[in-house]
Image (cartoon, rainbow over all chains, first blue to last red; front, side, top):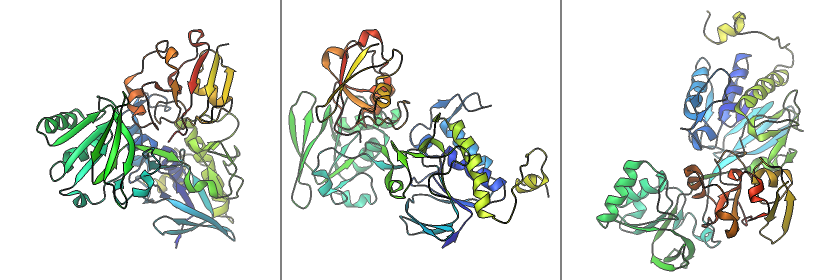
Length: 338
Length: 106
């Protein structure tokens, strides 16, 4: 069991800055995130897009913003639990007992949900029968590419993941690549490589087609794909891979007894606390009158929630407001003073 | 104010007046029309405000930016008349537009 003063759910900009604020006021914290990397939506959805409304930062990309926040956490020792998702939250006297999908257990008086709009999960094929084959002969990610050797693999999608895997798997498998339009949204060098492999007969490319149905008993034997002009093609295949990016799902958060309004968690604007004592929500996932879904609002919300955490984590101490410019306490924590 | 008709997957038709300058997505969210999630809040970053635009109206809309087409790759059952409703600005030119909401957004 990991004991901590506060557990942060979500390693996006708001979660990172909340961690900064917690450490600065002398609390320890750990961060859990479903993604395999730090940065949340900024890294998963739009790393290269410039942002122009971070105070005192005239322009930076979402990736730069994330890197700057990580740098700002350098003085502190913060434990990240990536590729892990909080599944269960239960009250045990004064503490919350938190269980993750990887089986980790935390005991903490404070949980700060900085979950964006939930956790990222792969977008799936629309035909219902695809579920039956999921993780057997139909996948949304590749864990062991050796299973595809000498088999027919049909890959759907037009982004980097779809194209990278088409190129990689064409070495040892027969690859069909299917995309809903002629243009791809991947690195130009990969797109060029795919076209080369198509010319060389290593990849069969079908554009303007989408999945219509999958057929097979235990494993997939064939699929039907449908052209924009309604023409239908039947393709023999052993495996199907779908790469349609990730979608955000509220996920298990919905089951923790919180007041939820249109996928957002209702909080007060003093502590950013939910209807459950010791559970806070900050950033895009929280809602209150006047809420703006801006990164800068998340920073403010995290700063206030961190002060509220202090009261529950240090019930016998008094929190004293201090500036980083003048407080020797804070400067020590920042490693700027002995 | 321009009128917009949203038809949900279960064939329920909702016609509402939406102020010029808002987006078709905002019109739906502010009026509690079911089926438009708009997770990213209008940033063309999630494809959960996907709608099908009735053919007669398609040409009256401003053309898709490249980023919108990229996001539509990830939408649930995209078609040739698919648009992200967060990119459709309400104006007098599209007064009366009809959009169909897909059965789900993801």
